[in-house]
Length: 382
Image 1: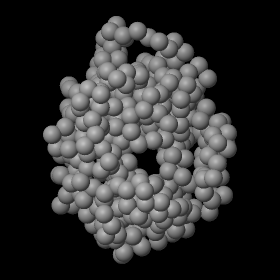
Image 2: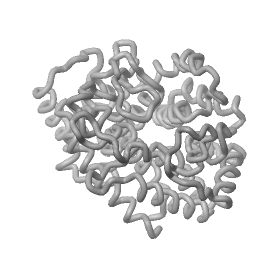
Image 3: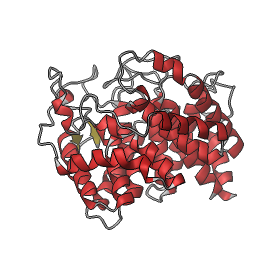
Image 4: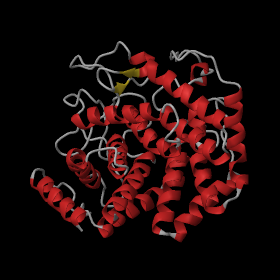
């Protein structure tokens, strides 16, 4: 009860400090309000899933591509959390019609192809059927036994994408490490964990800026600057990293040698990220140049919010410092939901800060909102 009262006080303070642009949904920290808006956002995206896939012309294994895989994984968790039988049937049917397979486009090393493994692992946790994991496990084992020695330097002229045989872009730290860690735990295969650990820190040593505690998206951005002269740190790129840590750390043994280093990385990044939060609760597409990119961006905001709420629940973040920004982030997310249930202000698939509008959306936005909602509900039910 004390937690609910504390949240209500913070909510009242936040509301008094900002204009409420969206009266369609309540941003109250109650189970009913949180479940209502999240259900509507997830349902809107499910209803529009096929239509959005129709626009993905020329895409191989469209259900299995990284953006859909993230959404399907989120739906599999949210549907079970709220016990929605229709949603449960929907995500299971998609997994079954794809026979629990994994994309090979453009090659077996590509990190983006691996994130679908989290959906299959969720299904395995519910059913105990190892068949759903076999294709993904074989892929992970192959990579671990034949680790790539390719460069981490990005070369967009290489149409074979050999530079993506390694985790050469920060998004990859969401797409692959959590899968390696989870399957290593399920099958007790420490070599999967060791491969993940080696590659994670190789990427971090290459792309992480210890001064700003943020990641460059890839090596193309090392020497680029925003209009204000600051380095280019992409909002969603850094959101991928911290959300990926929140997904990966639960499967990493706490006595694993690198565990404290991952926790410190997470804490350092969260401190830097919260310092760049807009007073209204959102983040923008460029971490250090909100003046030139002022529009709220909801995929970064939602994944940052998820990472903050997760950290609070895990006791890694001090509530006295982080609960208020976590509260404002959720309120910003609710304001971005259109009356139809569509989560707006979501940057399209990309790799850098770009202009967005309130009518833009993509499947990973609702996914991040569902992840965040679960963490908030866990918090208020403690």
